[in-house]
Image (cartoon, rainbow, N blue to C red; front, side):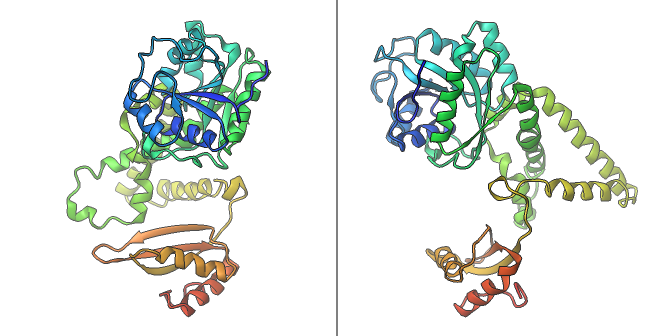
Length: 376
């Protein structure tokens, strides 16, 4: 069976953030994209965003899910962009109706949904589990971005039943979205995402929950550290509850490990013995952070941050980046911290250590406020 994805004909079932982002990426490659969602309003928004055309009826007159396809010709590939718990039933329904020749999904949990799909009697020879490692805190079709997956890993979890042409079609999809295919066993994938994604979300939520009852005056002091730690806690609670329940055991194991560390650190602080458990935790934290890959998945690098005071007005960041470009200096990372009660912000430009002095001099020469000694 020969399957073409880009260009070709693809059905995206589920027009939330991930599904619509995939659709936008494929549309940019000339692929015909058909859209479906249990919420007709979500389909209309995705259509209005240019992500494709409705799989059923017209955007303002959607057909019921039980009605037949507009065309008898199946799509080359169907992408099930639904929560983990909804994947098995969605796959069975799509296969019964002949939506496509090949199927994949984008759920962040693989082992449990795939086992349930087998139990339901899905045809596993035409399906391969998938998970693009990209997302945002915002949800819904209006948050979608065509470049959401550029340079990101996209995991495929084939089984012994998965046909080669199915993996080939899913791989073509991944490449069309600008991502990098990675093949893993489903259980290995679930343990991996429990460590790098799911458990961090729960820990972030636990810290953010401390702010719920905090006095407003205290929160007015919030700096970038608190924002960094709690950023991912802003994700959709209903969506995340489904993810956590679908990958419960690996997440629970990791949460217990984190809890043991925190209990030991709390005891050390309470008893005035921070040199033990607390110091050990901080040291292991530095070591663990140092193992996170750097840009483009390469070896972690150390950068020097050059702070610049920037007025909060249109075009200032563009001028700042232009100055760095004129100096021939690549900005590796950017952090922005706004000053409470003032229309200025502190921008930290992370550059290679050997470039910091040149950047500081160039910025000062152009009138930017760079603290004396920074980069020198």
